Length: 270
DNA sequence: ATGTCGTGAAGGTCACGA
Image (cartoon, rainbow, N blue to C red):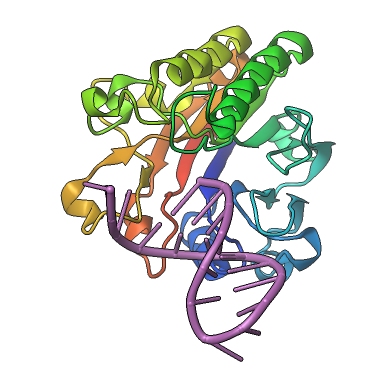
């Protein structure tokens, strides 16, 4: 069976539920993971997605900031959300597919890693310190909880572009948060510690440039094309052989009132 | 150095986070 998993930082699920439904209709992912829903759980637009047959929805939101959700047409069992850095700030949720045929038993973890502010010095910028601690805890989680044992997928807006060709200019980005050496090293350390396989880069190796985010601030984002690969899909070793393809929906950045991130999809033959 | 978004609480714009 073909299993399609997508991730998308939607930057307000209420404002953009129309874009989400368009994406679900056009691309039919089995599982869509959303970040930055910015929506309390009791105001999540469940009905919009259920209408399209996405009847299984796990949400972990709060008012105004962050928030993650998993919207699925395959049934699942909720696996809960882990609080990182001692904060319950709606940055993780997980499910295990169940009664879903050959996809049963696949666990999906959906993350929204802290952005980290502007100044890349943890001594004077506590947001950057938080981001680094969060990445440290993700590594500990891989070590202690062994989330990559079995069939598992990590997706999300990890807010780090780890490889040189994940940004428009490696040289000009090395002091910019999302591509500083310490963040890149820590994110690659999480992958290594968990023995995760970077699905997007397995299918589209360097040196090809891959971006999933373009700033709202550029006058003409397409002409400038100063993108970054901030959104990721990792699979456990057991699923690596099932990787069948991936797609980054760049055109979604041109939709009306877009998110600054675009959907990232991975196809698995399970 | 700037640029642009979304939210929420005011209050008819601003602060904050990204």
